[in-house]
Every structure is written in structure tokens, then in C-alpha cells.
Image (cartoon, rainbow, N blue to C red):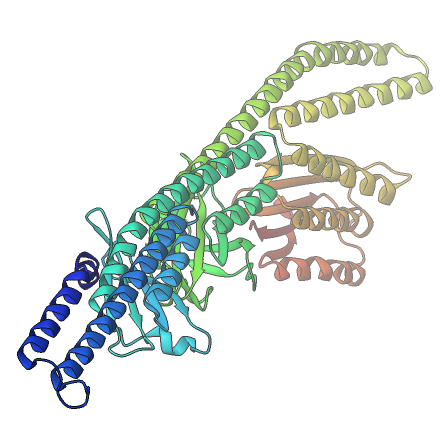
Length: 565
């Protein structure tokens, strides 16, 4: 470019004047031709020199024109690059334009990461150039790309069609283009950062709204996983959850992948909290991984490269970790993206905590209302029924007719049953769990129905006691409990001829059913056949079954117990 400037500044007129002067001087020295009008040697040499000078002037004029055209192309390229806002588009335009301006075959822009090492590459090549040739080019022209004092990357060009490969002018042109590209890249990065922040903020708002609107937690967590993958420009995203978030973190050994976004879903896979990436994130620390192959995530995400592992927790419990992964060779996550993703998960966890607080408030309101109803039943209804029962009991001895006495006795017994049912209702009102209420009703109904049907036309006295929370009993165990109670009551009434049965259910570490009767077994073989099924159900669940004499060797006691899971 310096040579082009000198050419443009040098006028051609002095050269022509010098040639004319030399020609005149030669003619003066030689004098007129005396040999038949033939030109002299000096005249011929002067004409040759003139032609050489004219050719040189023509070449320099063409160089000036070429330089002006290249300057026009450079200015147009600068304007085109600075008109772009998309970072990827800006980088690709920069490499393509640099190749075109210096007539290179291909070029590579190595974009540096925060550690100063190449993070990813932008390739561009002319037609017929294979990517393998561009991956590690023998660079013939290399120019650093700087943004202020930061080294953003390095542009390498190679494969110029003419020799020598690249001139000083080519170097100047590329440096000028690089300076303009640095400004364009900085603007594109700022635009990309602002747009990404806006997108993460919108996603946070949407997820929070879904949680507070009462949407199912599973659906919202799936949406959270999808949005994290999209916003993180990742290939996969997965949310691994603790089996029981209410358990202390030090009692949780592994997390289970419950939500997946991306190809090749691997739901149900377990991740140990002893791993360095998952363990640190479960300990409420955001982890960035440059290469997944070297971490504990490799078993679940083969072929993955950079990753973010983000904690998801509330004030009272650790819910799990969110993993966002790019394929191998992709650029690593920048601190800005990690910061936005961390804020995203923090806000989602805060929304979950608010939902839990709302649910607790609703439950508290329900329990308060139930407590008021229970007090009213206990203080008014039961007292009135007791008063009526006592009045009837005092009337029975005065009745002269046996039929009337029996009728009054039956009414008193019915009143006692009503009082017992009200007490059961009061207990369930204090329990506050619809599942518990339904299970208790099933248990009570099963005991009463089997006792009445098996003992008809006689009557069997039954007593039911339940200690412990029925809310921890799952559906499968509840079904088993109903089957066990039905067979145990049938055994006591049909085969032991019991007149009284006591049923006790204990819920501590195990779920235990104890059925005690006051009869004696009359058909041992038939009873053994029916009890074999109860023994099988207990052993299948890792529990135990026993049939032994009752207290003081009166009647029998049946015990069926399985561990709670």
C-alpha cells in the first residue's frame, strides 16, 4: 500500500521531459544524418527509452487504478461487516471478505476463549477445497484480531493463486479490515448479550408464572429443561432429581434423570452425588465443564463436550441439578451465559418455594376449619348422644317387656357405634389428608363387613385401633392391607369361631397389622391354605408373617408386617 501511494504521488511529466532533453542532446551531439537520411543510433536508443518510460507510466497508472479499486472494495467490506448484528454472521462475513480481498484460497478465524486459548474456529474456503485442508492450514498471512485491549482471535489466510503469496499491500488491507471487523464483532457481541439476557429473562418470567398458576410441577420442570437447552444453544439438557427432596442432602446417594430435552433420551438413569460435577452442583455450586468426557457425566452423555451443571434447590431442600450440554468441539460456555443460566434456575427454585408456601397456607386454612368442626362435634354432638344413651340405659331396667328391653339395648348399641364413627371422623379431620381418610374408611369398612358376613346370623364384636400416619401408605400397600384384613377377619370368624376381634394397625418403620381373636381354630387345614397367601405377600415385600396363640393362650394372634418404602 506504501508503494501504491508513492506511485500515485509521482507525476509522469518529468519523465517525458527528461526523455525529450536526452533526445535533443543526442541529436545535437551527432548532428544531422549524412547517410542517405537514415536515423542515427542515438535517435533509435532515445525512442526505445521513451517507449520503456511510457510502459512504466502505464503500469503505474494501472497499479493506482487497482489500488483505488481495492480501496473501494475494502470500504464496501467494512460497511457490510459493520451493518451486521448477528455475531456468527459477522464472523463468517469477515472471513469471506478477507479471502476475497487478497485472493486467498481459504482462511480460518481462531476465536480465543477466556483463557487465551483457541475456543472454536470459523472456516471458509473456495470451491474445491476440502474442510480437512482448512482445519490446520499452513498460514501464509496471519493477523491478530483485537477488540480494544482484548485478543479476540487470529485470522490465518493461505493458498494465494499468484506468487509471491501475499504482498505488503495484502497485509495492510487485511489489517485495515481486521480493525473494522473488531468494532463490528464488539457490537455484535453486545447485541447478542443483550438479546440473550432478554430471552433468559422472558423464560424466567414464563416458568415462574406457570409455577404460581398452579400448573403440574412435572410439566413445568419439563418446560424448564426445554427452555434451558434452547437458550443455552445446547444439544442436550436433563434434570436429575432427588428421590426424596425432603431428605437431608447427606442421606441422598444418587439423583435420577426425570426430565430430558434433546435426542436419545435417557430417562431413569442414575447419577451418583459422589461425582465431582454432579456432587458439587448438588451441593449448591454451579459447575462448568470444558469436556464432559473427563467427568462423571460421560456415562449418561457420551459424545458431549462443554457443559453447565446448575443446582436447583429451595431454602429447605435440594431438588436436583440441571445439566446443559453441547456436543464435542462446540465452544465452551462463557461466564455471561453461566450467570444467566444460574439466575434462571435460582428464580425457578424461588417460584417452587413460593408455591410450596402457598400450599402450606391452604392446608393450614383447611386444618383450621377442620379443627373447628371437630371441636363442635366433640363438644356438642357427642355430648348430646352420650346424654341420650345414658337416658336410654336408665330406662332399660324399668321396661317390663323383653321386646322393649331388647329394642332399647339395640338403640344404645347403635348410639355407641355412632359415637365411635364421629370420633373416627374427628380423628381424620385432625389428620387432614384425603388419602388417609379414604384408607381408614376402607380399613374400617373391610373389618365390619367381613365380621358381619362371616358371623351371620350371630354378631361379632370388633375393635379397631390405628397408630401412626396413614398418609405414608402407598396405593399398593393399601391394597395389600385390605386383602390381609379381609383374610385375617375371615380366619378369626369362620375357622376360630371368635366372638370378639381386635384389629391393631401400627405405622412406624414398618406397616404392621395385628388381628387378635378369642376363639379356637376348628379347621386347621382350610385355615392353612388361606393363610399361605398372606405369608407369600409378606415375604414378597420383604416382611414377615406369624400366627401364634393370643394373650394367656386364649385365641390366636395373626401378625403381618412389611417395611415402608
